[in-house]
Image (cartoon, rainbow, N blue to C red):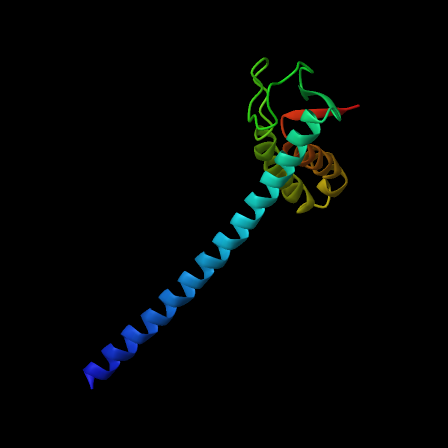
Length: 132
């Protein structure tokens, strides 16, 4: 009797493991598709730059010319767009806390707007492309 329950437990664990493997493999496929899309966009921008369609690539913060599309931090001023992601979440949580109180509902619009601004800046990245 205990052998049967042990066998059932092992089969159940194997089923869970198979589900985890499936989830991980589908997640890997989605990530690889996203990476491929980003690489295509970068390749398109590079070909536009070589073809003369793009005048220059500059930093969004200091407006100085940057050498590559693929920079994570400006070499001149140190601007890093990923820092806006943290502030987006801080403002979103603050808006949620304010919405929990009756008085805070009208005030919640301020952190909501700031969270949207930081989300936009984080998604734009470091470089700005100037086309001719």
